[in-house]
Structure formats: C-alpha cells, structure tokens
Length: 144
Image 1 (tube, rainbow, N blue to C red):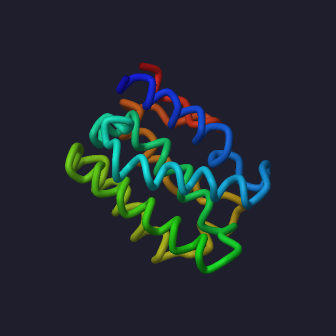
Image 2 (image 1 turned 30 degrees about the vertical axis):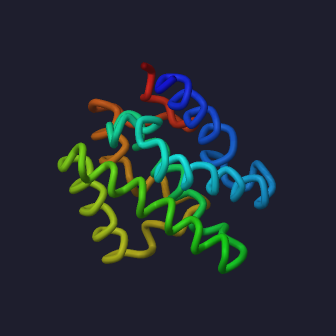
Image 3 (image 1 turned 135 degrees about the horizontal axis):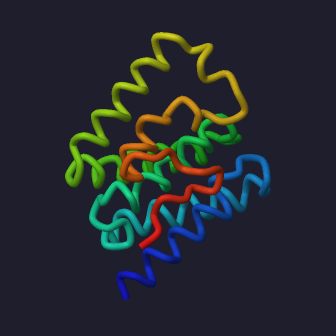
C-alpha cells in the first residue's frame, strides 16, 4: 500500500506540479490539495521524509509559488510546503539545510529567481535529494 501511495504522489507531482503553466491553475491546485492532505495523513507516501521521495514534491510545490492566483491557493500551497518540509527536516538534515542555504542565497540575490520556474535556483537541493545528481525536468530521481 505504501508503495502505491508513493507512486500515486510521484505521478501526481510529475503531471500537475513540475510543469508550471502546462496545466490549468485549478487542476494544479487540486493536486496541491491532494499533496497537502497526503503529507498530513499519509506520510509514508513521502517515505516519511525520504529526500528521494519528498524532494521532487517540494520542488513541484516551489514551482507553483509564482503562479498562485488566489489567496486561498497561496495559503494551501504554503501549508503543503510547510508539511512536506517538516517531513524532510525529520528525515534528512543535510537536504533540509541545503534547501535553506539556497533559499537564503535566493533572498540575497532575487534576480537569480526571475525565470519562469524557481527550480533552477535549487540545484543543490535537487542533487541532495537524488543522491548527487540534479533532477530532470520531470522530477526524476525517485526511481524506487
């Protein structure tokens, strides 16, 4: 059952969250709602914070930050990020610290994140979550 939940989350993230603008905003935020609920109720779907499982989800959520069209969507997105980040923090301090350092770097130089997706700003985090290689465009790296 745990593997089926993890596979469902992986496909949901790949299809709806890792390609900002490729799907309608309402569908993307329906996916954010599911991710948020699953992160709260079924942490095993994220390997209890295993960075190979939760890393692509966090990256997908980060990609939604620039496109959150409504305050309710932004609130839901922040809840999903908070919950998945707590899972990551409990499981892998190195990956969590790497993301924190990259967020600080982005805040220090906001021009670095002016592209269509913030994901390129988090290559170190992606590498930390994939065992040393950055994720592809579709969030690969969780091959198990």
